[in-house]
Length: 137
Length: 164
Image 1 (cartoon, each protein chain N blue to C red):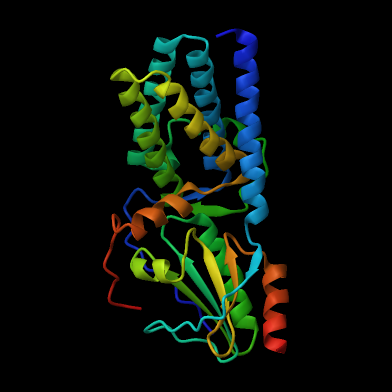
Image 2: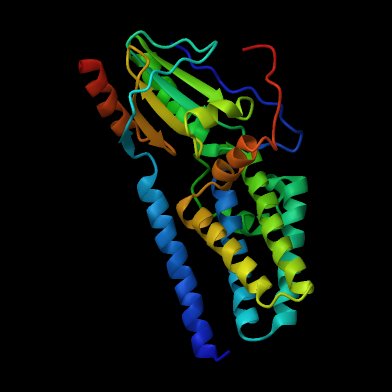
């Protein structure tokens, strides 16, 4: 193959990877509306006013960072619980709640209904804003 | 209220490492894979296959000894003294897992090439390049998708420990 064409293909490959990276980055931590389904999982106590339900695996660095943010929010907000579930042990939960990546976080209201869904590492400011909205309702 | 941490049985190769290490390593990997793609497209198929074979060996070694002792780790050691001290640490299990994923992808390309599929090495190297590049530049986490997929398919399953 002619070297100029090879160079162009390599530039194209790097450009493709960059676009994919930007798309992935833009989607990380974005808050989407939940489907209001009620969550009930055995042995999982929910918060009285809201629950930050996180799905993780052991092989996931951003899960640790997310657990730190959500754990801190739960500790400093009354009646808000943080639950971190390892779906390696419970793959049926990943299927039931359509978890396609870790971490995935569901924000549940006082009734346990899914009000918001966050894919990827959470952003503290966005979670705080969403939680305020749910707690105010 | 307090958080429930996921329990895990940790293999002995798991260590706490500077998060920047695996990103530098992924950058070196991406450069090697891009060279493989270039060689393959230039028609230097044998050279491309050999270099991808070397990268496959690097992946498998890193997957066995752990990301903390990655063969490309020397690059990060060279530049670390010019960087600020580590501010974030991570478990070495996620980047170690991604090395195994990299091995599977490039090994598949090598096998297909050796049984006569044209451009198998180029395609495998290009796919692995995209993942390594996005990992290095944007912090994409391979295990966050693939490990979960394997767990959902029932290929990874551990019984929960008794304490909760």
